[in-house]
Length: 249
Image (cartoon, rainbow, N blue to C red; front, side, top):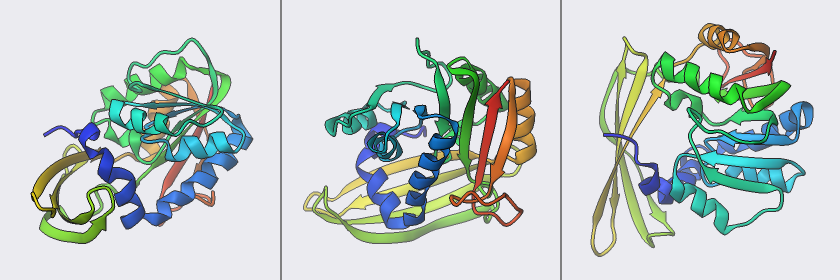
């Protein structure tokens, strides 16, 4: 089953706030990096604009790109000065403008499941970055460092304001040790008067510092900094995140 982001829009921001409030600390990190590398920014995987809107509200000029028309529509409901958005894919998005800084946020790059797709995306994004401009990634270095198989468990039961009822969420996962891809199968039970079921499948590919460095160099980038958290401390083997910044050369 392919990930259907259009149908997931009512769960995405709500569930992120519910399960991973620490991720929201990335907004301040991205603003710090924009001040350092350029406030003329394009974001891939912008979702409903959690990061893009924050950057625009703090003085950046941002182009927000996401594959999901529904996510982009949700973003456009709340117009923000300095922010424009459109539906697009990092694999083939083109623009008549060049940007100082390209950001690929919250594991978005890891939705690309083959080296061929990753290389295609890097080459494509290089074309919309100014000479001497930068690209940055927020990656999860532990996608495959979990049990190989997790049978379905109940993760939560919480009230959802959109549906005005409780939602039960059940999840299971499988790690493919050959492809380094982890697949999550999530089941949401919306417990209103007409109990509904929503299924969501998510696949993410493991990336490492060495693999990213190799691909970036082949695509005309040079790694400038590698951080391990949203406070921009240097990356170590125990770091929570993998933040990579590279310059177009």
